[in-house]
Amino acid sequence: MKKLLLIFFLLAFYGNPLISQGFIDHQGTEQLLKQLNREYSNLTRLTTIAKTPGDRDIRVLTIGKGDMDNHPGLAVVSGVDGRYISGPALVTKFAESLLKESSTDSISNLLDSITFYVIPNLSPDATEQYFRLLKYERNMNDRMTDEDRDGRIDEDPFEDLNGDSLITLVRIKDPTGNWIPHPDDDRIMVRADKKKGEKGAYIVITEGVDNDLDGRFNEDGAGGICFNQNMTFRFDHFKAGSGEFPVSEPECRGFLDFLYRQWNIYCVYTFGPSDNLSKPFPYIESDATANVICGMQEKDVLLNTLVSDRYNNLTGKKKHNELTLFNGGFLQWAYFHYGRQSFGTPGFYIPEIKINGDSTGSGDPEEEFNLEINFLKWADSIYTEPYFVNWETIEHPDFPGREAEVGGIIPYRMINPPEKMLDSLAEIHNGFIIWLASLRPGIRILNMESTDLGNHLYRLEMDVYNPGIFPAMSGIGEKTRWVKKPKVTLICSNEQEILGGKKIELLDQLDGDSGDHLSWLVRGRGQVSLEVGSPQTGFSTYTIDLR
Image (tube, rainbow, N blue to C red):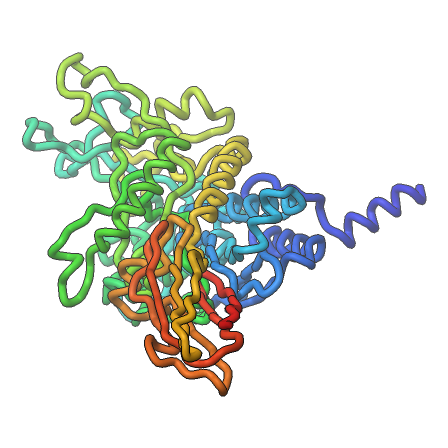
């Protein structure tokens, strides 16, 4: 009995053992971060940078060694969209794996020279909906808003009309509607294609009633602002979920303030709906050179392509995926307004199931591809738990006497993996993030020479070299002038004088695997010092004897 009490006490005091399992709610994330910070206190720092309108903390777990904020930094972020509940799980699993392996030579050496800023969940108000009794895909925080601009707040939410605690769809038979069952699978509703001679047979709405009698359904439910619409790049004014103005929300402001203070961050890696890894940004010269830059710089496109190729080699080619971006989105902000390399992925892709033409056996399979049909074909052989609510007849109060049915794909299923897949996905992404960190920019002094010219004059020459694949400054960073340039400072004694060259040299460019040749003319014997580096490359000091 005493042993059982001791075990209970230890579990209560220290929390659950590592590693985290499955999707993780806000309380579980908090417990895990505190446990990691306690278990690896020599490598971690846990800070709170904001509170959401729902009074939930936004946490940053910093992982590294020594003077962490003066090493190149990689931010690993999730929760920009609360519907993607696998993101916080993958980020926490990355932190756990990194710390668990921190005693191995490879990871220990990595942490000597790079810092990871791990932010598991930027939308905890939204992700909590998954863990509540009523499940629907939510991406908004707890800010009360008037989304339909009718002077009332949160007056038209979802309603669970069939009592299954899931919000799906309602289809109402109506010849004036624009929807029909898909010819390959009548579980899925698609818009009628009039070019093919198809005639609509249904009205399709989200599950609920028209509470405010404005002819729309569920357009003003609980919560209000989406993190991934509240950024400054291409902010969508007057769009539901965007907010009254950019960065209006405390979690958005707190996170951006944190990033702006971390000069050393060279790259931001985001789990969420924005995806430039399965398909990289294209180079569009007119956008890249416009007065208000809205296109990726050419050298950054080349790097994005390199990183994307590696990612697709690990996760498989994705034939029908497109570059996914959002107005007011975080991935674009991190690149265009923060000036850092920015990569995003949902972390999970449904494999593409081959479809042999349309229902008549003819037609182009490429034209027939449908994401929902593809999901059902895959889910039919993968899921052991429910993933679709079969259509069920109901009496809808807004359509009395009409044939109405509730059904559809269960919320969260299409954009998140089954929990049993999280460990394998985490293993792939953990390795990819470590590889990304290995490309970090750095700065070294090579080929240093001092030549005695007589009469106490010395020529000092050297190459400043970046051994990384990432440039010291991104292409967009050079344009915005926000990212700090690499700096070389020559420090002489009072008895010495610099006759040629500058005391402080700012390097306009220092691309990956490239260098810059510098030289000075110095009068006077003795030691001189060189301080070289930038926040995103780290700093080094060299001493040279002039004799």
